[in-house]
Length: 443
Ligand code: ADP
Image 1 (cartoon, rainbow, N blue to C red):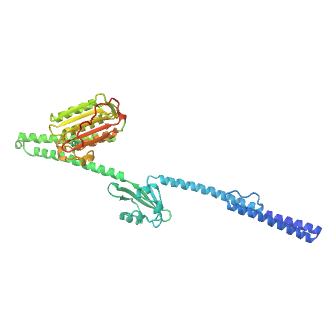
Image 2 (image 1 turned 135 degrees about the vertical axis):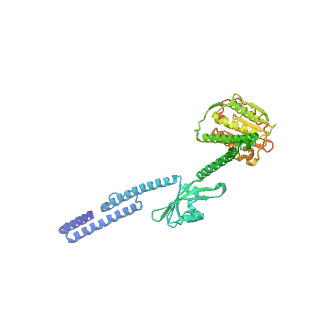
Image 3 (image 1 turned 90 degrees about the vertical axis):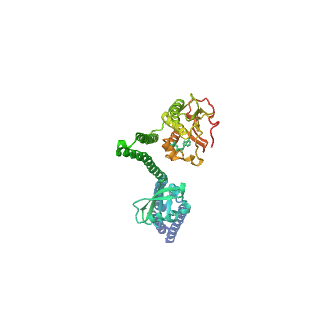
């Protein structure tokens, strides 16, 4: 402004001096011309400013006379605002990325509980499509009466457990609503399907173990009571002997159960290293000696095992898997049956341990369940032969710890074949032996 006033004053002074020298009319004319020139220059400057306003992010035009003083602070303020905005956008983006990276689902809801935003985890948990569901009430998105009751509460001190989906596709979610900002809500979702499954497995396991223990303990305490209550002469010697034999059998069953439980627990708790080269032939022969004693010459054994074949693994774990398959073959094959044992290297480089029997066989429908803990096809037969229902569960565990596979093929009334295949990467000897599958009973 001061520049403009100085210019007007200079023109006025020039006009007055010329007016004094050449006459008043000339002086006024010079003054008017000066003002006109000032207006023209100002118009030019304003049009340059108008052009700049259209591209306000660029620096203002240089030397626009008196307008410099006005434009410079405006431009500086604009520049500072732009930097502040960029910084806020960076913070916002970082916060958004952090929210996206959350392992839990997060949804923001407006005061009427309509969906404002959600992260990818929430999309997966609730099957949302943000472009479709944004603005819709969460009560229409999660259509469960218990959630509607939960969402209508005034405050949420506890989370809600919700089961969504059906059958094997059921997903268990933990939902927790929290008010935030002015009347908005944050809904956090956590998938606890796996945790719930583990908890159920743990409960089932404890119930099964208690049940397995109760039977032999009831039998034992019954006999002990009888022997304590009745005078010695009231029980004939033969009967006393029979009681003691039955008690011994129950005690053995409990011992077997405890031993299998300890094996399972050590499999689950011990660290899983690659192991060391193990020659399985002596391990198989040891197990065979015990099985032949169990068989008591009731079965015929057909054995072909490679003495040179070694695999990298844990010897004690492998011994337990090998022994389980052999004892099962003896226990589920009636007298006169044949038990075939093969341990060989296959042409594809895998090492194969196979036990086939001509026993009672297994219904195809239950084969996938055989490796479940405490699963037995015939509970009575398993118990009578000292089974715990854990043998194949242990075997499967060992197999998985060695990156091997367990195949079960069986025909009821004809027999079963259990095959463990160790990957070539675990095999130490490479000369292929005879094929194990040649005349095994097929499913
Ligand atoms: P168990 O101690 O009861 O034998 P396992 O886990 O070893 O427990 O086996 C589970 C079930 O699988 C057994 O109860 C039995 O019904 C069935 N089974 C296992 N091996 C054989 C086999 N060779 N022939 C027939 N049935 C078998």
